[in-house]
Length: 386
Image (cartoon, rainbow, N blue to C red; front, side):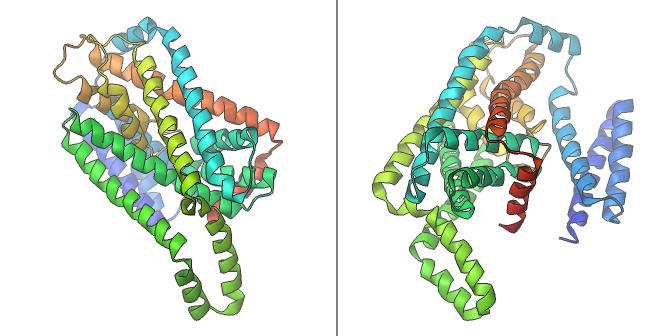
């Protein structure tokens, strides 16, 4: 960890190099400011003269600005403003309804993942879910996942490690589902080499994770033998206790009937996200009807974008994912003269309309649970010990 500043410094150098290139191209004052800012921060980070939290803030900001540049650098701002003004914002009503249905089924899925640990009522699970989503939006390093495990474990008296294990399974289901959607879109009509490479890398990661979890569940005694064999007793005991809690959260994988219900709710969970995207896209005039592939492809594109480190909430990453999706799916179709500006406007509205309701629900649930900043810190400490 003491050398982590070297990695952050190198990434900041890349960001500074990008803005240097853009300044040479355009001679824009903004790019000059960015290259001086991030270049200086990169040097200070490499020699470790900046606190780690400021290094992370600078890194996240730089990554987001870099990706935002790909979307907004060459647009005409008057056309962009007009696209925002002409949008039919009433379409966000059914979009939000579809998003709420998604959260409903996602909560049911989590309840079934938690069943081996005990019966968890809907509303505590729902509040834990949206608090975790809010945490992922406003906290770095996806700390919301640990906050979610901490909140439900605290409110229901469950093993926090066990609850976190259910989130590992949930993320594997999410990843496999996203890859299947990406595969379906590629097979049914979208040809893009970048998507194919992303799909292959994602497949290696999620299939490997699934195999690892299954091996751990079915061959847990291997881990016990290794720990008892090579670790001293005073260290082995607490580690085995953590593994016991983690194993309890994976127990659903051994129960075919419960696993079947998880798969069912998983399918329904992800059906409604493209529907929500579709209604939001209908708010804009792209020059041609929105192809069915656009909202469907947007699901894996945004999911893969959010795996890249960046500013909390995925600012920049989300906008680039929306642009790449719409540019790919509208290729070959008749588009409006202000297509690029409309895409940029849509990227903002879709991002806000998806995260906004979840963050509001998360903040409201945070207050209902009676949580405080000390609980956020406890959740982050849990992240550091996992």
